Every structure is written in C-alpha cells, then in structure tokens.
Image (cartoon, rainbow, N blue to C red; front, side, top):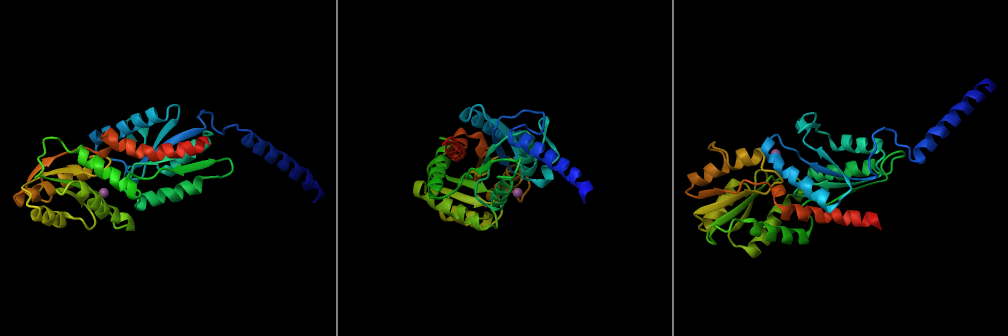
Length: 295
Ligand code: CO
C-alpha cells in the first residue's frame, strides 16, 4: 500500500497539472480559434449549383457578425464524409467537437431549417449535450428556424408574397412547396397557408411529403379557378426536390401534373437562402442570441 502512495501522488500532481493547463485556457489543439463561433447547420445538398444558397448565407452571416469564426455542418447522413468545395462535410457533432478542441468557448448555431421539425429537435439535443462539458464548450445556443411562432409566420408570409416576380398577374396562382414532415411541427405549413391567404387569396402552400400534397393543392387551385401557377420551392436550397419533384421532366413531377390538368406552370427555381430578405429573417434569431452573449 505504502509503495503505491508515491505513484498515486505523482498521478494526482499530473492530473492537477493537466487540469490547470485546461482551466488556464491552453487549447488542446495547436490550431488557434476565436472564443466565439457561429456554426451554420443545414441539411446539405448533392446538387452543386444549389450551393449558391449556402454561399449567400455565409456571406450574410459574416457581414452581420464580423470577426466570428464561421463553420458549417450538414445533417444529411448520406452526404457526410463527402466534400463541399475543398472542405470535408462534418456532422454537427464533429463540427462542435472540433471547435471545442480548438479552444472555442461559445457557439451560436444557425439552423437553416424551415420549421422546428425532427432535425431541428435533434439539433437542440446535440447543443444541450455539448454545453458545459469540462474542457469543452461553455455555451452552445441554437437560433430558431425560419418559422418559429406567430410573428415569424406573419413576416415570412409577407416576404413570400413580396418574392413573387412583378410579372405575375393577380388572378394567377402562386404556390410555395415545402419539404413537409410527419413530425408534429408539420402544422406550420397549414398555419403559413392561413397567414398567406390573409395577404393574397391566390397564394398557396404545398408539401412534397405530408398533408398538403399535390392532390390537395390541385383541388385548391381548381377551386380558385387558376389557369396558371407560379411555383417556388419553400426550401433553403433549390436542390434535388426542386429539380425532380417540383420541376422535373418526368410525369410524376408537380409541373407535369399541373400541365396534365390544364394549369400552366411558371418556375421560380430559387432556394430561400438565395434571397437576402429570408436570410435576414434567419439572422434575426441568431443576432438575438449574440446580443444575449454580449450581456
Ligand atoms: Co427530402
């Protein structure tokens, strides 16, 4: 027993030394990083040209919060390990662990999701799990998605109506098609439909998955007597769903099915992330977080 006391003591001193080094702020990794960072989390896309949306978001984030380290994470498992530009695609966990190892203390996460659905709730859990770990991140905050509460429904409705090309005539329908979900937060889509209708009787919301499917939307357009519809994705990027499900050449796409039902289609093939007004809406939530940090 006595012989091991020396060893225990040495181990204790070593542990103390390591703890002090960590507490006194010596980052474990050699690569320096600022103490506050923004982590932009998106679903990700396999469509190269859809990334203009992400590039635009990054530019606006850097402008709104100058001096912050800005990093990315994607939530689509199938896209992890591939590369975006020259950088490898990291998961949220990998990106947070890397920031912690570099000595970052505070991370504000900007979630480029539209509704607080399953992926957003996963993010909340991940953020909570990474916060306050010894040697790790002190604070990990998550900004709200684009739609979060009544005020956001009203302002996003206004932005959507404003985003329609001036060429569209009042009696022509306009349709915003979101991803859709079976998560409880899918109620955001019919809620958005309600607020949109208060601004424009010919504005509609649809979803690729979930209740507001093609048949439901077609019936609404027919009831409204629409002969032409301006269709836009209600998605951060105009990626795979926009290219195939909405505007694809195959007879299953929404475009072809509208045409088959005698309704002309005009495509607005842009992701919301390409429009500075929508990015500003996302950034409002992020700025509120960093104002709190400053206090
Ligand atoms: Co999908």
